[in-house]
Length: 539
Image (tube, rainbow, N blue to C red; front, side):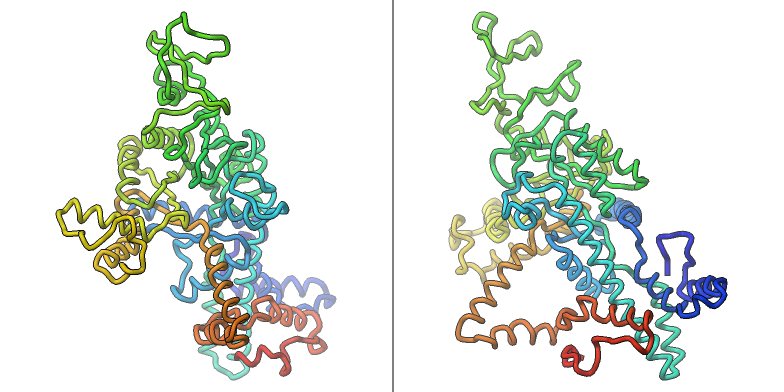
């Protein structure tokens, strides 16, 4: 199989041969070492470091971006993770159901780190959590993904041994070929670095830690670091472009310093919903980025005679303008300029080192996104987006209202529907609801074709699935169903749907440990998988 260490042979049999020769050079003192066992352990530990992973996955993302440019049907997807086990199970499930992890990634959400991984307890998405928890989670994700490889390969090695024992050479050859062509569970992780957790130097230092843990793609947003808000809450404050671009460059420097030359920088703009800025941009000449940023400030024209001590005044075209300043000392933008500022942000980012864009919106609407991307692509034709298919949106209500509005515009009779109450279960079986569901189903494909969305992600899926499944189990188990509530709705479904975790000992590495015991101690090994192991009930 292909190894990340180019000094190692490419195939399983070549590894055995090389290790056998190495053992012989030690004049019998290493004869207790099995060359094939070492080859198996090497295969199960393909990636030696996080940087190996970052380089490997960056190449995957670059290839996927090129494939999308050739055909927007080749968009990519991911689901957000807050624990390594969650990420592992996603990739195991993807391989189980689709046979390949191609174009499927993982997303590391800063929101979920804040809410679920902070030593302070649950926190809002305001960059108050320990920034070291982000690279720690990246490392944890890849630890679990690598163990998924070790587990699956371990089962294949056992099958090889069984084929040999039964004299089935054809089956053995088939399995050996499968090992050489094995597809890893290790996939790209797009990691949220928030607004950089400080100044550009702090961003650089954190970016290095995240890349060293395995991240090939860093997503950074244009909010003020110490005033950062969740993209779907109020009170967002953006920074001038030069401040933001310094952090973008800091991320690029971190990638290049560590030798991850294909590293991906995703720049997120929150300008659509951000009406405030903490500072006025420096402008060196008319039309530069600072001047453009300041042009959207909400200002009052004043004369020299009314300027007061402490006023901030801008001179534009010979006119004196006083930006409107709030009691918080923040300046506000003109209402209705969010889309224009998003377009400006995105073009500036792509012209200054970004690879992918992220436009945070308040609703999932293909044409709203496309209206901005069309303008961006007039300047940069291959501009591509990462888009947040957020649980913060009420997808059902939004799409039912979109259909309602479209039908109204088309002159269809919508008198049977109350637009404000379309979330009601009473509408679930109506033609309008069915059309809305069809649009939800095709949203990702439509958005990728029409609005330049290369990557679709759901930021917080397992936060919600964990809550829902726990609620359902608690209702049954602590209610009249008691133990049947668990058996019927959990274990029985695990067995019938082929969920690997029904053998939780195996999933936690018990069989891998048994293999190692046998490598180390031979027939003297005390193994856990004997006849009294209750996991045998699930064979």
